[in-house]
Length: 355
Image 1 (cartoon, rainbow, N blue to C red):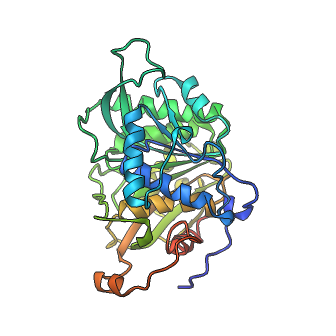
Image 2 (cartoon, rainbow, N blue to C red):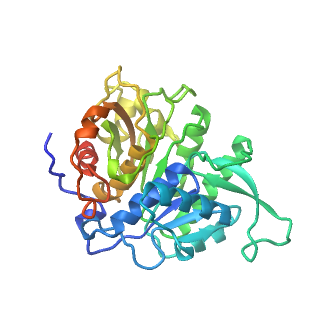
C-alpha cells in the first residue's frame, strides 16, 4: 500500500478555511484521545483544523470531567493540557445551554451511550442550589469514574436527542457519531431515527463485526502505556455506505431504516434505493475491534478526508496488529512535530473509497 495519503474531501481539502471542532464526553478515555489528536492536528496547517481561541472544545458536565481530560492528555500526549477556554461545563439537560457551548463550532463528535456518573454541579456554573447533582458523561469509558451510575435507556436517548437538537440550532456542518459498546440493537435504531429527523449531515461509526440484531458488541480495548508516538497500531478495514441525498423519500422508507443496511443483501432493491455507494465489504472472519486509540484517529481523519455534506455509515475493524512487539522495538524514532498521528496516512487510505 502506498504511504501517500489520497486527495482529501473534508476540511483538509481547503486547510485555509480553519474548521472548529467540539468533542462531547472528553473526560472519558476515547473522548480525551480524540481531543488530544485534534489538538495536535490544529497545530498542523494542512489538516484544516483550527486551534485558535477556544478550540478544539471539550464538552463536559463538571470540573471533574475537565480534570479527567487533562490527566489523559498529560500521560498520553506528552504533557499536553486543555485550559479553561477549551472546556465548556455544560448543563446537558438544557438544549439552549448546549447550543451556547457550541457557539462558533463547525463539526461535533459525540457518542451514542456514555458511561454516566452522578457528580455535584460545579459552583458558579449552572447550579441552582449548593446540593445540585448532574450526570458527568464519559466517551466511552473512564478508569477515573469512581461511582458509575447505571441509567435507563431513555436517559441516554434524551442526552443524545438534546445533543443532536443543539447541533441543529448551532448550525453544525457535520456530526460524527461513535456507537459505543453499551449500545443495544434497539437503541441503535432510535439513534438512527433522531439523526434522520435532525436533517444534519452525519457519519455514523460502528466498531467490530457485530450483527445489527446482536447486542453483544466486539470488546474494545485501550493500549497499555500508550502515547501518541505509537500512532496507528492495527491493520484497519472499513466497510461503508453513503446515503443518497433524497434517501428518506425512497419507496416505503421509514425513519432510521438505513441502520439495517449492513445486514441486508447487496442486491436487495429496497435497501439499494437508499445507498449512493458502498465499497470494501468486510470478510466474515474479520471480527476484531481496533484499539480505542485507532478509533479516535479514525474519528478525526473522517473530518479531514470525507465530504462533510454527505451522510454515511461505516463499520471499522482490525485485521490484526500493524507491527509485532519485536518490530516496534526495532522501529526508528520518527519526528512527531509534522504528524498529528503517526501513520495517519493508513487511515486516510482506508477511507479513500468512502464517498
